[in-house]
Amino acid sequence: MSDFAPLGELFASERSIYISGRIDRQKLWYWVAGEVGSWSLQGFSSRGSETHDGAFVGQVGVNKPSHFPEVELGYLIMPEFEGQGIAFEAAEAARAWAFETLKIETLVSYIDPKNACSIALGQRLGCVIDPDRALPDGETNDETVVYRHRRAA
Image 1: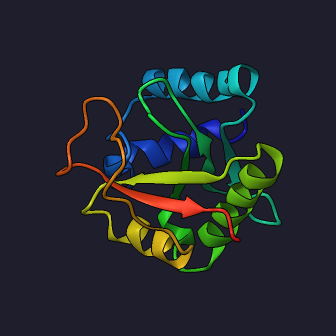
Image 2 (image 1 turned 45 degrees about the vertical axis):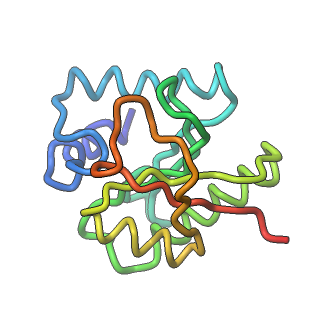
């Protein structure tokens, strides 16, 4: 709950336009409840990320809501922490956890083609565009590019 207020700021900001758009505190409550419930239902979800001194950085996680055809590695970081390697470190750790703990062989990142920061992070993580993938329900090629993460050989 200590991360709810800063998460609310993040989802009310321009930063959130690429994942679901700005949402108010009521919708955020349902979103957070869904994330928490996903741990019980599926054994995975997003996690709040913090600096070593406890400052909220954003959220990174492994998700598969009902409208996603595959398990996704997603990330959203507060603007003031961008460019410090924090998102890369958190996403790399979440991906390694999914591969090792969940025994998942592949993950995707659903990224808006206008979201240059997320694309750059995905490429830094080594994922590549997958032209033979399924999109989340209701999304189009103009809205979503699927980047594929594969377990290292």
